[in-house]
Image (cartoon, rainbow, N blue to C red; front, side, top):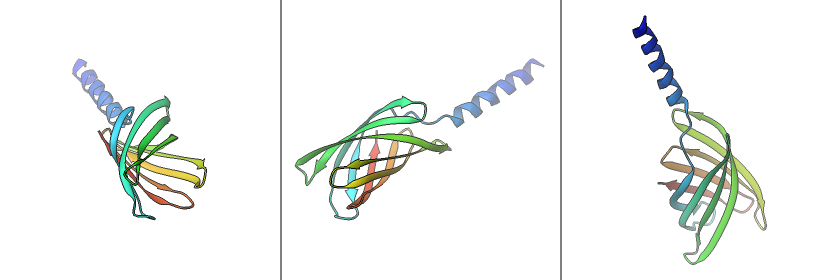
Length: 127
């Protein structure tokens, strides 16, 4: 009887560990690229979990190799499966209209597409 209990407990732990979303909080590095303009550059991000299904992310990077930018966004978890968490967010940016994000992240990679009235492209980060 105790071996059955031990096997049931191990199955419970394995199932719950596999169902957990990856840990995203912390620093990330990578690049951004625009499909609309062809511009690209370095990109850093700091993820901070603000709720069970929400992250506040501050992106910093460079445009045209010398112009710094900072962009903060709240990303909401829209789903998860097989160690991947899916996120989305949007906000209004002066001169760009609504800037929308869709992303897929693991514990080590973050790949997002962005779109706005004047631009669309990708953010690719890792750690």
